[in-house]
Image (cartoon, rainbow, N blue to C red):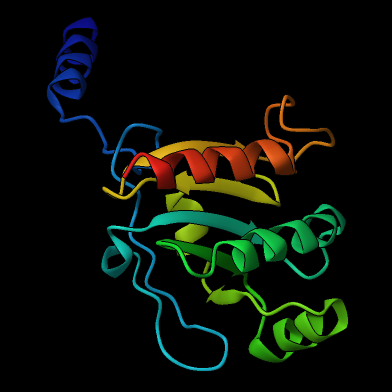
Length: 173
């Protein structure tokens, strides 16, 4: 009996480890985002290589998401003539709900729909909103799981601080 248990334990140790899902990690390549775009088409993060990309995961029911949207829209507007793209990734809601939300809040973002949650899982999103900054090489530079903070440019993860990070990456070529 003890011998059988020992053999069973040994056989278990010889089994290859189960692969854990790979999630986004700063310093590593950002996971691909290829999702339906509100309006028409499909997003393609790989095609945006060469641009600084800010990815924001959100939902229409999320109160902190609502608070962040005007600042993100302002950043996208300010940088519209630069090599910058803001991916506004809605989590598992339909196009009608997203359009109504954008109209209610006066938004015109590049909204994409993560209908099955695969992109959210790939980025390790555990809280909404969550924000990820990707450099021109497609490398994840920074990530924030949770809302942006109040404060000025000296406050890490405030809207002005994040805008400075984006501009810094744009300036670095």
